Length: 332
Ligand code: SF4
Image (tube, rainbow, N blue to C red):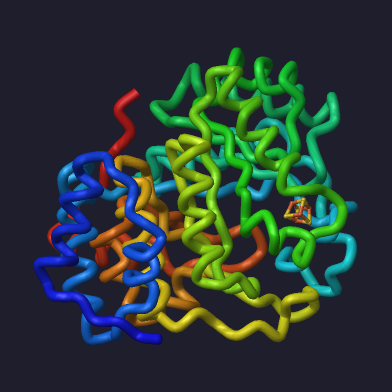
């Protein structure tokens, strides 16, 4: 059922978020189920909150796929999983020089954060050492924050990454607890939460987000936002499924752009001071409405995703400039 709120009610939700109060389930569902005609007013409310914490600044992040494919896990959305038939490039862990060269490219693209991502259930000893070595060199020579995303992490591994200079660790909850077994059978929602906690305990900034469009209900989207608020994730990537041919979820349709905007606004209102990133699937799901996303989100990826292309970096830079927003350069 679609619902309509007065403009002042939407801005009332922004004021509530700014007071640090959690929206009720009913209010959160109002956002997700609002009439499309109300999207601009909702984005204005989200912007009220975004502006309070981040002004018009946009953080850029660049991904390096440091190890591609060859993963024994069965995540249904992922082209790199053992059950995927997607024709992707597969390679083992990149050497240190290539990882460091990626950091230089991140600087060229004005990214403040360089995300070293590897496929797999979790890092081997050798892989962890390679990341540690590369991170030390990058931290010594470039003003970049480094985020690692290497799968399930033990507390001792998390401490080694932190000591090497890894600022942030990403491990997404991806979907709701109840929906998790529909998406993956080789690990659990709780194992994902444990890794986020291990990263936090080690002193790294926790990054955890979701993939919208994997059969979850609106109630489950609200549940995910509450879960990430409770996890106190500093950075929350909101991915919208890019259904890749050859993966088990290849037949799922895109999230309509208007719905994607409502989801982004909801996460801004539920997790007001956090870095909300409009992440994978941005181009395909938001299409021509991408600029509006930045009224709720304050962060994007520039360049390609793990196995799918992103839009041109100059187009992203222009989008930010055309909005009158500005790129937030890294201030280490
Ligand atoms: S999401 Fe990660 S763990 Fe899951 S199949 Fe893909 S690479 Fe493996």
